[in-house]
Image 1 (cartoon, rainbow, N blue to C red):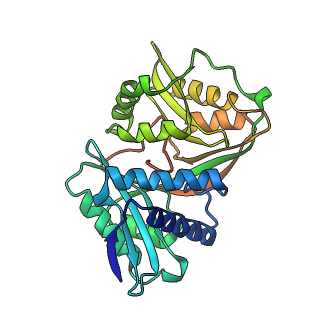
Image 2 (cartoon, rainbow, N blue to C red):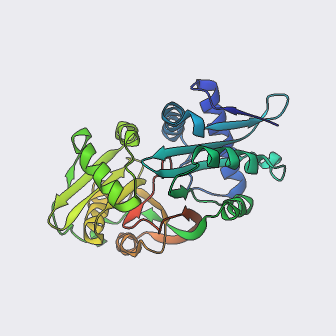
Image 3 (cartoon, rainbow, N blue to C red):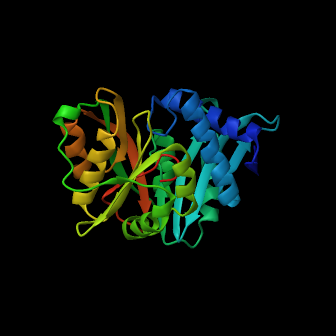
Length: 290
């Protein structure tokens, strides 16, 4: 087995997408940001390209001696917060040490950081690796179904459509909630998502939503603002459209309440691994950037 850095090339980004799709099919998981369709595929390739450019030392590909891809990992560093949004191994290569080797490279990239987050681990082997690396595993929920506008509560205050002008506000909220700003990740998210922001005496926050109905990332300084933003983001989608909120820890009961009011169903969706930090709240992690 050989490990090499993922290159900023169409070939490598497509290889990562194919590995992720194969892993998700095997696990029956839908919470890794790998929903089917050409739009989702483009977004995943763009996310890989973005992290390869911003964090080349955290993006690795495992191959066998013939060049066949075996697995991939993405890790990022943002102001002392290390994040591992992707660790995938091809189903046919599992059990051969590929995941452990990739995780070791990603952890080396984050050496010395105070806080760490890992994505949802549907694969029990990946969950064991993460736990053995010193992460606490927090079960997560998924809300999904057809959106019912009639049952949604009216937001209790203003929430406006934002953009690049709110980057400083969003970074400030990130620091308060997860210990480190997303920084350059916001520029990438703004290319493919709408963002709703709120900033008043009740607190500050933002929520990214895509037209396919996925709440991609939400952070707020209070549950009241978080619930307002989530309701506003859902109301911006057509009633009856399919909606997904994933990676919700037990600390996100405010999101569960809004989702149930909107007619969504609750299921389990894996775990979120955390080291040196409590579950960020109010917070819905990004599939691509945590």
